[in-house]
Image 1 (cartoon, rainbow, N blue to C red):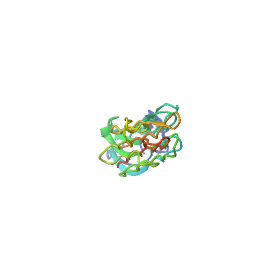
Image 2: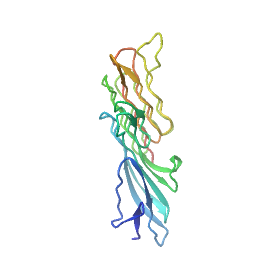
Image 3: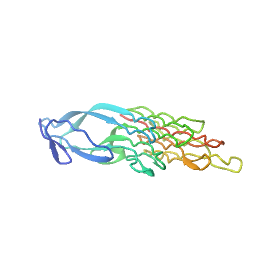
Image 4: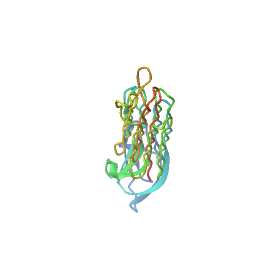
Length: 231
């Protein structure tokens, strides 16, 4: 009943799917009782280089008539060097973290999110480090793997910390992965293995995941953490 509209276009079935890498507007039907219950399902984007899978979250939500929804569908970067949409880290050589997918009510702002599926962390370019999976509704993002320098997954209260430590006179090969900045995953760090490559970037989420770093040994590079979910 009523007229469902996605970006101004009527949807006869009352069910809509949304394409990745874009923010979609959605208006609620006019109903006599002034509210409507909708089922929402969201999937986060996978991390780069076949990294951690995105999270999944679902739930029902009662909306007032004519209340605006904004469906923000994450993805990874379409370019080797770039950022994933909706919080995927800015990274290089395909090591971008996956973007989160979320739904916002009334205004297109992070504080208005009612459900989030975190994006996965990216794999490192070399060294075998794997990105952690993104969190579903109410779940933390998984940590990356590879070595002790993995990126930490985002939680419900804190952004993920990047792995490793900065290069120094006593640790020439050490590299620090970027810390997540609120909902945005941490930027991949450099990884030296005969020449410069990159570690895995962090996924976006309710709080983003940290990027992987490098140990004191050449080529030992880690994956990024996944972003957290929320419901």
